[in-house]
Image (cartoon, rainbow, N blue to C red; front, side):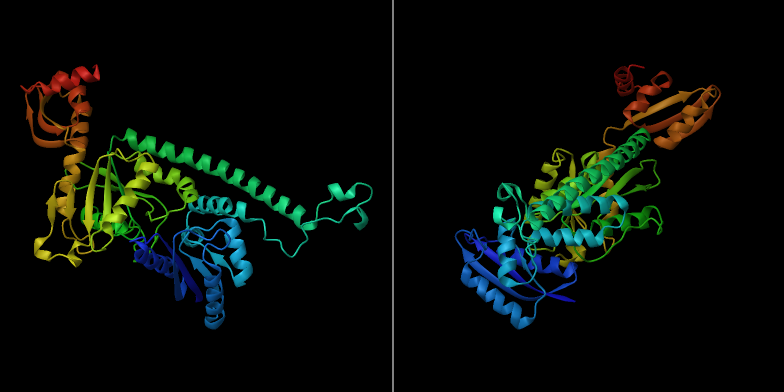
Length: 440
């Protein structure tokens, strides 16, 4: 396993600094890198050349030599020139937090789309850092006396500069190719979404900080209501265990099915290039009818994590979607006898222990199916398709076979109430109102 020196700069006495450094260590562990030591520095402002002070640079260099570290990882985002200067001084690879997260995503990507998205983000990160990567080659051509001929000193380019331009062109060309491929996949994903919309099944998206328990919650719901182990998603106690969006159908057995999607987790300082690259994947959350923000309630910093999630959702223009807050892992900080606990749009539960899942389902169904109408229809035997549709799409309260048709009482969508309003025998005006809205 590789060893790294972790470096953090606490600017203006940031209260979340210790938590951020702890998170950096967890990110390194997720990348199979051992944190050999930590070095921190309190600064009112960063050093333009090295981010840290020159004295700290020497301290880090000595520690790298003493511990035989393979790399140095900064918790902060470094500019290309700072990263280059540090590598020249420390003589080992220098990563920043963005670099580390990109590396984790690169290792975790499994599907073709995820691999293309990560490659695109990596190349966008690399592009401004090309300068200084070819130090072995000269960047300056010779003057007129160095074989340039008449006027050659003004036009010649060194081998390093030529190589740099070639690298830049290759990378820009590759980014364009990736964007084209991803647009094709984005269209396919949009087509899949349209098909799901046509099924009229509402959609629910799991969102939240990485390692909050989204995949555990999805698998437990599949266990309880689907009994399907083959459709389970990867579930592991680590940061960014899953990158790919997975959509599953949840069928509780009362004709109030919905689609549940598991999305990539968020984290503080999630690189913008990754948010941009994974936008089409994250749009499962943007197009959902309901969000379940899964929160690790046992984490002392869960409030800050909720804020990060909210900010990321705003960036994705999904901040206005109705949301339920699933305070997961509550059994680690509360007595099990207190669980589940429902307070408005918040529910305290334990996905791993299966505590509170029935209550969560009730909250989801209230949000998704709150506009259902109680209707009674007398459907003639000649329209068997209407009976079949209601049996498949609505919650059937009662059904009887009369002389002049099927008498069926249901809790159904407004659209179905309007579609079959001509058969309505209910005294409620709701069906007629829905019927007028549909223009049937």
